Length: 224
Image (cartoon, rainbow, N blue to C red; front, side, top):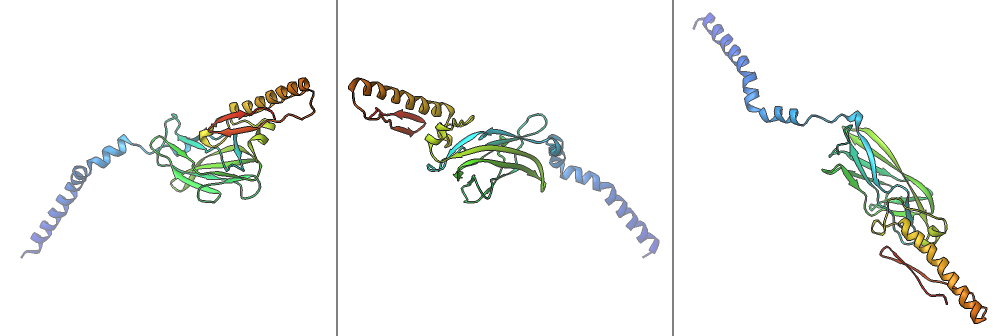
């Protein structure tokens, strides 16, 4: 067979193959091109962490209850971003808290609403501490936030210190501001009532009051 003929055939095949390649790719993978146009990659430099719950939380050590943090990752347009890895870290020593895994670090991925909720966190030691929150994508940290909380030994200790929980409730494991105020007011009212009874009765018994905290309510017993 003529060598020139073979060369001509090979050149023609190579030419046709190269010509058809772009058309073949576009026909085979149109969904990928469309997806990239509809779902552009997020601008990692503009992401931020918004603390939804947990800031100024009041935790009770003896009851092993803590205000569970909730954060949301948003882009520059305040749109929630899913699929972001969020890490929560508490101090290794001093006032702190441990997560459900028994350690000082908890990791989760933001859901479709861009949120991560911590569950099972318990306080350790009394005092103020901070929870460091970081958001990561593509193996690099893109945003950080700090959540401040305070641990008290008992609910009465929190009430005596005037502790507040700006964004907490009994359901979250901590004490709400209203509940703490109710405890303080109840103690004062019970003591005043007891003083009146002691004055009229002529006795010398020092009045006392009992406090119960359950299911987000405070009850103050009669002086005895």
